[in-house]
Image (cartoon, rainbow over all chains, first blue to last red; front, side):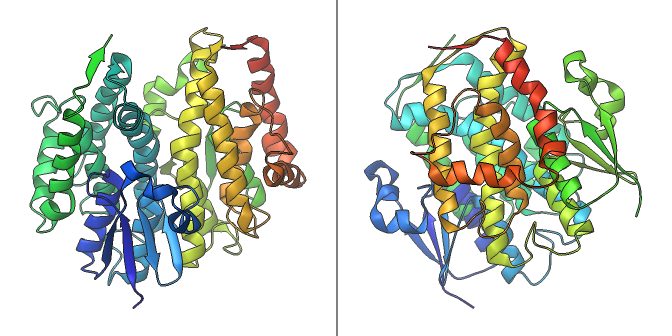
Length: 221
Length: 220
């Protein structure tokens, strides 16, 4: 087995999705903190490995892989003893892929990043209400996806890791109403029972929420 | 092989990425138009196929696959004579996957934020910041092309299909500057030479280009 390093930080949802996967696979790895506020991701070393300057970044011996979804799929395919987390069956895999692309575009980019960037990195103190309200659509969709215990069916997959990392973060902008979204609430409780959940996602999600709250942003019509 | 049906509409870049894949694989399929302008994607018959009400959607002999990236990976894995369009090698695949997610996160969201107000909400003013963001996308795509002739390395992959499809509309707002982004400009010419490019992307994309231009947008 190669030497695995994950570069990122707990507050970052995609980093947490990868942490959940590494823990689920029980893989030893080095966790390297990347200080985004000091622009470590633009440093020469980091840029050589990831010219897109994003976190997380996985190093596996000489391989440098980025994008959390690509990382998770790679880790499961390379190291897992079975394909539960990322099924080899093509139709089941397509379902997981669809959910991960939904997370990439609709959840991460259009909600989390779009709302985090101005406040955390550009010093803005207000966010437009229509952008925040987009989160309602996300909750609606995820609730409708949960026809079974997990997003892609009856068992846990990396799609759950991907979406839980952002869903537990965007609540800082628009809290999840458990009464309105009982399936999401039940699914969250189910994931919290994973022995590594708190370490891999729970505490990092709280960190992210606290960080955003400390900026005292307001939502304006 | 069962019957393949693609649901979609020519204007949609993700649909055209699947058309490119289907043509590249030499697959027979039925193409059923879903008229988004008339809300056909919101009707019960389509919602049964895709509750997320997006196009494209694929019906493979009664089994439905949604999201263009998932569809393209599925088609290559199931029907490809080889894996060149979506490599089985884990490291090579990870590079393609990262390009696919760059498309579904950054590129698609930006494209939607530019096209939605223009085409659906009658708003013909486009903020300069969006054009700046588009320039940043070109910069990244040019960077990805450092590693080879195509977006994920030296071989054509489905990653190239997604970006080729979405750029058709985006270049109307900002041309690819070949002095600033020479690799991207070269790549654009290279993909246009694919024998099925015109049928799967060029011609179907021409309509959307005409539509965009007819809106007389201004950058503010």
